[in-house]
Every structure is written in structure tokens, then in C-alpha cells.
Length: 278
Image (cartoon, rainbow, N blue to C red; front, side):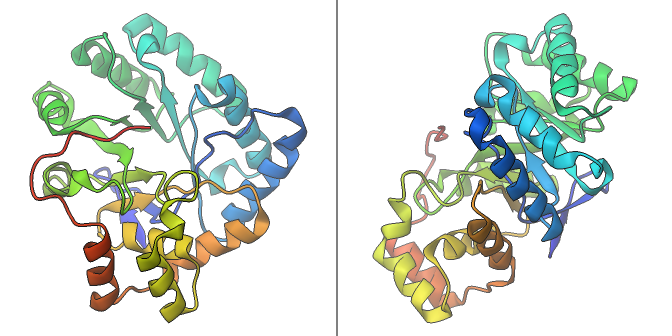
């Protein structure tokens, strides 16, 4: 599977695994952990989670999936904005490490911007990186203006990624945020790359492209997201068939005709668009 490198040189696969809505039901946790393990076997070694997901339950599912194979995974987790102060972040991170049952997190993100000043959050993240509790840090749901402010901070250049909503229905980042990140060799992580509630996957344009490639609309949406050399997509799947289909999307090469058809159905932004969030 093709990889994308962070600025520190560490490479991750262009397709990872999301865990939003995992860990919400105890009876489903074994199935969810099995799905994540299958994804690891198929090369989707980046697993994205957050303290918010399932009130920590998703991190516990990830812990089950990683049992005996920590070194095979690149673990991403996120801290809530109200926990992003210097002392609160240290405490929140310690809770996440306990739930994940690991000694460090590969990439730790601010989930979205809140009332805590960015400078304080960055200082807290830097302290945890220097202490070895995280290997790198980044942000999520920050727009270009926020990223510019962040980059101007003393340690702002250490920001590894911005995780944002990105799919054919939500492509506003293409106007300024994605070029801004690409110019700095900063990968963007695309969450909800196949949309929400199945609406995107019923779009005639995706259905037609899928038919041409003998693929599924979800595979087309994933291939579309990772067509950009600086984008990593993190679809969530708890069903083995869906996990295998997601992994197979990495080999799907869309043609210029395919991309043009998607552009006609979902035009790229002609100007600045407010950052979409879920």
C-alpha cells in the first residue's frame, strides 16, 4: 500500500482505520476489535481514535486489537478542547494511555479548537513529546487561519497533521487549507471519507464510476480522497467484508474521466468555504 510521510520522516499507509462510534456497546467490542486486527493484517496500520469516542470505549477497543502487536500499529488519539490546557492535557493523555494499554501514542491531536489558547496547548503537547509520552502531535478541525496562527508559534512547525472532514460532498479544503498543508509537506487526514448516512454512496456519479471499475461506491470515494498525494483517509468499518473492501480501495486508480464525472456532480470550491465539521 502506498504511504505518506510526516515531516519527521515516519511513513503511514494512505488508508488507515477510524473508530468513531466504536466502543459504545460492550457486546460489540469483540467484533470491533477483530475488525481492527483484520485491518492491521491488510496493511491499514494507522488506527485513529479519541478520548471522546464512546467516552473512552473506542480506545479500549483499540487496546484489545493491539494486544500482543503494539509495534505493528501507528496509534492516533485526540484530546478534547476542554482538556487542552497544560495540566488537563497531561491528565487526559494519561487516561488515554491507560485505556489504550500502551506506553506512548504515535500522534496526539487537539480534537477541535476551544477556549484554551493555542499557545498553551502547543506548549503542553511539546512537553509530552519531549517526555516521550507521544511521538508527535497535530490538530483536527482547524481551518487555514487557525493553522497560520499555529505555525507562527515557537513550536508550530512541529505540527504533524490537520485531520478534517473531506469527501466529494465536503471538499472546501481544496481551495486553501489543503494547498497550505501540502506546501509544508504536512499530510491531511480525511475523516468520514465515504460521507455520512449513505447519501454520498447513492450518488449516480459514484455509482457509474464504481460500475466501470467493478468496485463499490465506497471504494471510489476512498480512491478519490487518496488521489491527492498528501491525503490519508481513515474510514471506519466493523464488518470484515467492509474492512477488506476498504483495504482494496488503495489499489483503485481513478481515471481523468472518473474524476471529471465526480467534479461535475460535486464541483470543487470556487472560493473560500467555511471548514465543514461533524
